[in-house]
Length: 252
Image (cartoon, rainbow, N blue to C red):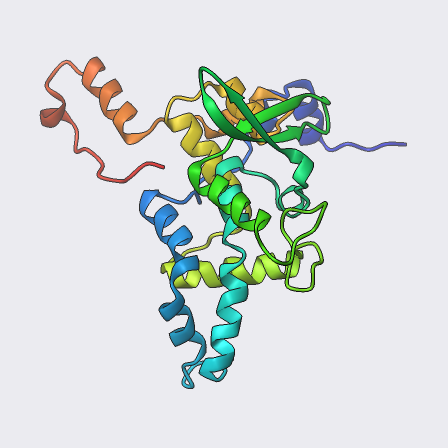
């Protein structure tokens, strides 16, 4: 006999409750963190200084730190693609060359897309890539060690591993000065939040992130600071400055 507690039974009858109980998306990168995170992969001096510092745990000779940096820097294209698409980490490291599509037309010119197929709906979506992601893809294409299948490979030619992804993500956070809680999955949240807050249609964001339902995507629909100010200004009887103390938080 299947036993369901009263709360689960109630949520089953009123599915909106499940949405209301979803945790808030609150760990996105803000604009400054976004730039600092990507810049960390080019911070050779900062990387070497960190890992060659004998006062810190895990320090190594400077020559070895230089070698480690080259491996770290080589993963930048992977993180550029993540911040252009919001892929789940498994899908990210499994990106194949056949997923990279270049189209050339009179209206848009030469544009590079990531082709992804929603695993639940089977729908193919073409995501236009940012200049940073395109530059990273071309960098991978020109490397001496590359795979005929996988876009992202390591020095041994094997597909990029989750272990290396986690390690390089942690190092990038440290070099970027991000000390608060930030998981790799929060990069995906950052993409969704930024797209919604900058006016991209919710159905388009749904397709980019590969959600099967727009209800999931709506979790990112928190009004930006600009939108909040516009709302309160429009609805206030008195001038906004005399009624409210405005927040100075940044939006992402």
